[in-house]
Image 1 (cartoon, rainbow, N blue to C red):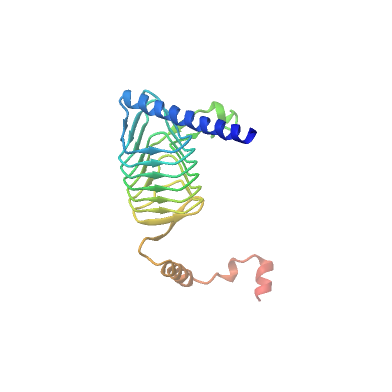
Image 2 (cartoon, rainbow, N blue to C red):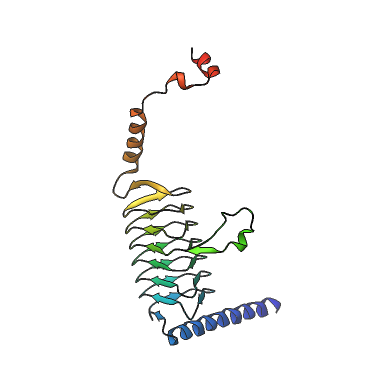
Length: 221
């Protein structure tokens, strides 16, 4: 009997969550925010949109469970048609995500950062700064990637899982690492990229033994 009651309680809880999201969406639409009727939002999606921010959610956008969309006063958060956002993502601030872009789970896209240059003051008292993020069309961002303020990611780029993007990524590039760097271009075979990198290393002049420390030169001699 306890198991049955627990299932009923869980079902009622899920229904209430769905009703709450429905009310939030209706309120945002009533306030003039643009949310396509074909856009879908999974369970426990949070839309924290200030009344002085702009939100645009295009046709057939999908946002999976436990993801957050956040916009503060003056922000413009734009999700173009056919954008897919997987579970447990955070998209915050002035961010544009272009048509057909895919975002893997647990990705963070935030347009703000703390100031910390003054070591004499607590970081929390130094304020912050915001710079808009622009993610192009047909981009794929892998799981756990972090996209930081002011970044522009070109159309068709691929961002590897666990990458931290701190600078612009050109169109069609495959980027990875922390901080992220361009590894190759789409259409260029990975093997060709590795061979080119090895060839560059072979072209480098051999080290000059005179540049080695004395102890190292003795070993070489």
